[in-house]
Length: 190
Length: 288
Image (cartoon, rainbow over all chains, first blue to last red):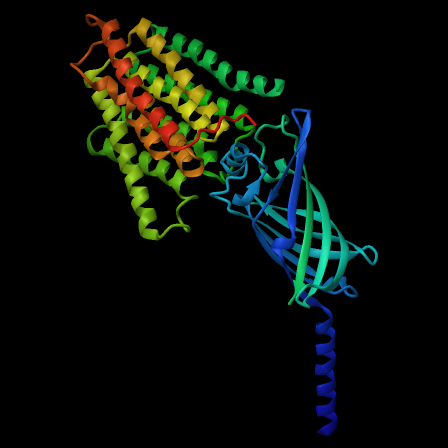
């Protein structure tokens, strides 16, 4: 009986140690940015924009990427390209139709560790009501204590997608199909 | 920029010219009775609308995911329901019209309000839009037949759709604006043809296409873009300006003067609609 109890307790402790390695992080929007680049518009110049409102969290274990996961939700209505007129168009039915599709989401399906700093995160990206797989190239910038002693982790990710894949086809090809994403995230360990 | 201009030419000018030629041939055809001509003209107008939509949007989505994706199907449906109206009478006619109005209201509203707004308010919206579409299609068809010539009704519709295009464009949707503009030009071409060829009546098909297509465009503009509701409302009632005054006949006396006066009444209401647009929102010039 004592042997069985000891074995059970040991297994429980081991399980606890294993799960403790994977840390939960919550994205800090004040220290994070979701940027996108479209261009060249009319073959002349690039347009940059960002999404100002988003939330997300991820599970990160540097030694066990199979357990890692990412989930981000972006408010489509928060698009900002430094032109109120253009933003109105982008939120409208010609482009994102933010009233019918108010959120864009990313949910990871696989994380592959390339080296100590670099990862490839594949997941389902939902935009404009359409879900397609995309791969983010993620680089861990650094980790350490924040101003209040909390543990923070910073990453920078890039991806390229075709807007036509998400049925955002207005003004093609004057506004090119390729959209480059650059996502800088700072997250707080929970 | 060249591709945008080319797209505009193919999506707007081509269907306008095509509709003008085909509608002219149908209206001139001596072997066709008027009750056979209008379903054919309805098909041409709807076909040109669908062509214009597919060029401007880039494709026809099936199954439709967004309210705007329903526009080509609504237009084709209007020809089917309009043809049924032409060959039914009494209660059956009202039921056909009600189904057409309800189906259109549902396609536009379901994606926006159901599941997002409280159920009771959603149902109220559905009922209200259905009744407005039902009543206005009945009024423009029957009131128009009793009080106006086909040219006058078509002029009113063409002006409302044409200026509706400008309102939609300034209200934040270049695509809806272009589609509406193409529709307005097709109706304008038909108005010109009926002025010279003077058919005895307009029938129910064209008014139903107009009510359901423009109704969907304006609803989409106000629900998903920044087209103010007062502007939509005033554009909606503008064509009824052609019903003001004593009844008219296609070849009656002073028909040009009457056409001009009634056109000006329509334009006055449209002017109010555009004033409302400029007062309520800062119009989007689409230049950035």
